[in-house]
View 1 (cartoon, rainbow, N blue to C red):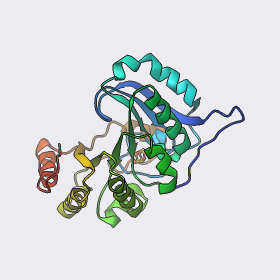
View 2 (tube, rainbow, N blue to C red):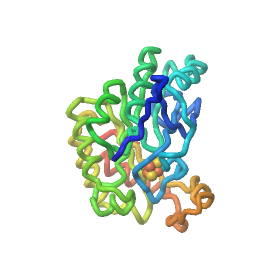
View 3 (cartoon, protein in one colour):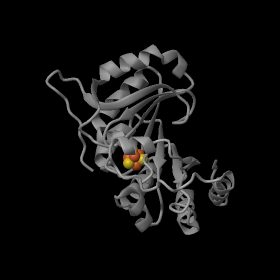
View 4 (spheres, helix red, strand yellow):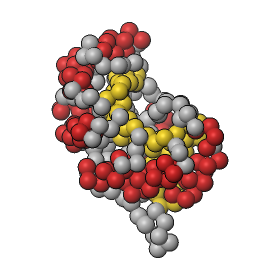
Length: 251
Ligand code: SF4
């Protein structure tokens, strides 16, 4: 994966930001300031942020400008923190590393939401300033992973192994798409793999939804999951149980 960081002549690290959310509640613990970074090398069939994928789009912001925004809501973030998501935040590793370093100076918890399809060496400086990784593993069977994301699986598994090696607290996230990611051998394989990683604190099974479908239409892209319905509570519970059967804390 190529990175797209830039440091202009001002010397300030500049990033391409899709958007920010000041009171997020689903991307890590507590109330969070969520930064949606622009650019993503994956092409997930169910992507609900396809407008985050083009690395040339987004608004240019310096770390200073973003930290000033975070400062306005700092009091709400005491029991939460700051999450970088996207898009793929590790396409801009210098920016996110500097952002997280500044967040730590402010005493704020940092979470990195990533697909793990990254250059490990580029990611390491970011991980130094990351308290929690939200690792999205989109499937475990290599062919299925490729079908879902259009990139190979192995870099993500390598990244997961590295996180275990450095004892980085990690939550694994898996999107359940009926008829696509739900084959039992796919889920069971993932559960068995994750159960070997002692740094994984929990697994979140995220039900597929179609809230981003209109964005595909706006971008003139074909949305191949048009006829797929979100999973039922029973389907979700069945998959959660597969993770629990491996001794994992899952919900
Ligand atoms: S990793 Fe996230 S932003 Fe990138 S294509 Fe997949 S769902 Fe979309």
